Length: 112
Length: 118
Image (cartoon, rainbow over all chains, first blue to last red; front, side, top):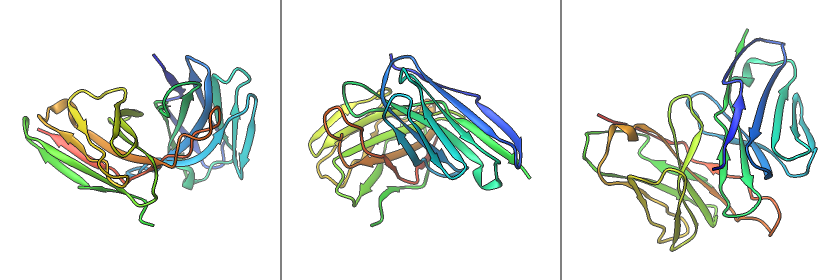
C-alpha cells in the first residue's frame, strides 16, 4: 500500500540554525503538499508542489519535489521560535480518489 | 466564514459507549474527510466523502461509520468505543478534486476532537 515516510521524527535546533525534513514515498506521486501543525493545534496548509524537480520558496522556507516525484524536502533557514511545530508532508497518488497520504511528521523544537 | 468546525472539543467515553463527532463546514466544499491522529503520529484517513450522499472508506474505517446527508455536515459515529480509538480526530474539507490530471485542492482542517476511551 501507499506509504509516505518522513525523517527525522524529531529535531532540536538552536535558534538561528537551519532545519531540513525529508519525505519519501513508496510510489510515484501526483503532487505533494506540506502542512504545519503547532502544538495543540490542527494542520495548516503551507504549500503544494506539482511538477517534477519543482522548487518553491516562502520567505525562509524552501520546498523541493524530487525529479522522480517520489520524494520531497522542506528546508528552513535560520530557524526562529515561531517555527516550532510538526511538519507533515502529504502525497496524493497519481490515480484514484482524492486521498492524501500523510507522512509521520517531523517535530521541530527551536531552543532560544 | 467559520471554516470547518468540530464538536465537542474533548470527550471521555467508557468502553462500549457510542457517540457522534460533529463536523460542519460553511465553505460549500464538496470533499470532506475524517482523520485520526495518534500521539506522535501522522494522520490516518478514516472515511471521506466526495459529495452529499456519497461516502467511502479510508485507510482505517473499522469501528466507525459516517453519513453525508448535506454538503455542510459530515458526522462520524463510534458505535462501540474501544481504548484503541483514543485519539485526536480531525475533520477536513476541500473544494474539489481538481481537474483531471491536475492537483487536488488544499484541505482545510477543523480544530479537532480529543477523545479518550477508558
